[in-house]
Amino acid sequence: MPAVGLLELGAHLVQAHSVVHESDWKSARDFVVGASQPDDLVTFAPRWVDPIGRQEFGPDVATLQREARPDESRFPRAFEVSIHGAHDPTLDGWRRTEERSFGRVTVATLENPSPVHVLDDLVAFVGPQRMQVSRLDGDHATECAFAHGSPVSGGLGAGPAVPGDRFACPNGGFVAASVAADLAYRPRRCIYAPPQGGKSVLRVRFLGVRLGRTLHGHHGIYVEAERNRTGAPVTLTFKVGDTVVGSVVHNDGDGWKPFEFDTSSLLNSTSATGRADVVAEIESPSGDRRVYCFEADTQ
Image (tube, rainbow, N blue to C red; front, side, top):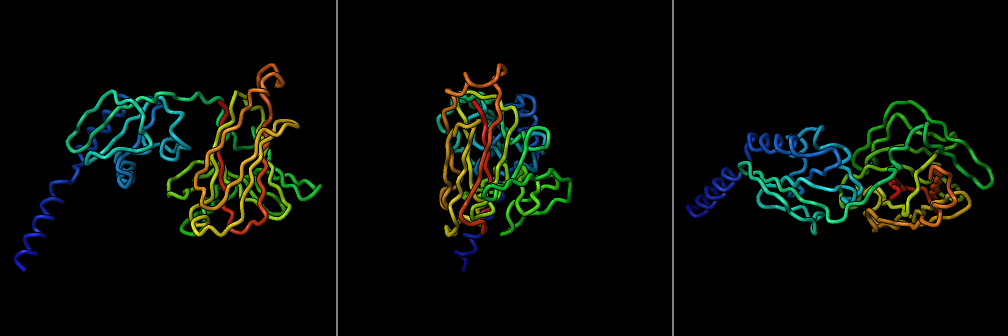
């Protein structure tokens, strides 16, 4: 019994002395606010400390674009806020240029060795001005109007939250911008577009997209619908005019799956502005628990 008591006392002392004081978080936040630019990444390590980081840094720093990022490739620089000597493995290969300590909080500045330049982020197109949605059932096409309604909360087993502003199809189906948890439970900002199943195709048209040499993106299924690995595959196909740019299939277990298609051959066939409509088609043999979300950008 005395040995157990000493062990508990030692554990208590370790816990008490490893607590990160709020003043440390505040000092680290003040530094990041002063040193960072809007296109910089701010990330927290270890991963379990992310909710604390969001609370302490607030939504102006821990923004949706940073927290629910599709990947790290678009950020030229990162501020890694860490405790206990942790490191964000998604930044492996980045060059560490500075490191500062604020009590028990460390802020490291890292540079991306090869940041990409995003021309258009298609998630930002969601809305009636820059996007059209229709549902194809055989040869019959039904337009899906943009509606202003009440949001529907997500939750365990319920899928991502569905915003009140969304494209709604009269005979079922909808498209909206949301945040979905991928197979690793990481939040991803994406276009929520559940396929209806059978021969039905959900068609999303992005208007006047600036084309580059690459169409790059990711797609996935909400974790609670994917982790048992019993669902039907979902196919995503991109087209520009009559040209199929590329097609990718998501199978349960793929997680947040990346894709990249070469669009350099389309540059000469676009308008003088370099813009063209990009069409995404989503389909699956079954719509059962196909809580599907995708994102894409042009580079």
